[in-house]
Length: 181
Image (cartoon, rainbow, N blue to C red):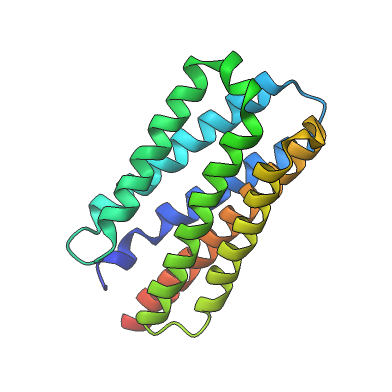
């Protein structure tokens, strides 16, 4: 795990990108679905790329690296899909965003359990973030008819919670690294 902590900043940067995406979507709620799809796609590609980098750099030291790699690659593919098919993406944005948030929620829960296994006492916050993401995702998928504003709002909150989870995890990894030094 000691070498894993050398790349804590990748998760920090990923979290900052996600929070920026979420805040931007809240600030500009009247943007078209096209703008949201593009913003969403670029952010997903970016975070997917950063997660793949993190997992590849830690594959020798982190037993769950393959799942982060697979989910990062899925994020990249999903983001490319959204960019290449914007009209189709606009029609299904609530379901697409809800499914993405569902995956991120389960990933956050798994990360929280991993953090617990590594002895972090505050693992519950990451796990709780995962539960919150899953709740938001189910709301998005179950009631897509709420309209564009609610889609943007719920997506923004889910993206912000994912970013917070990533930043929190990076801070804990940095603290762990500093304690080893």
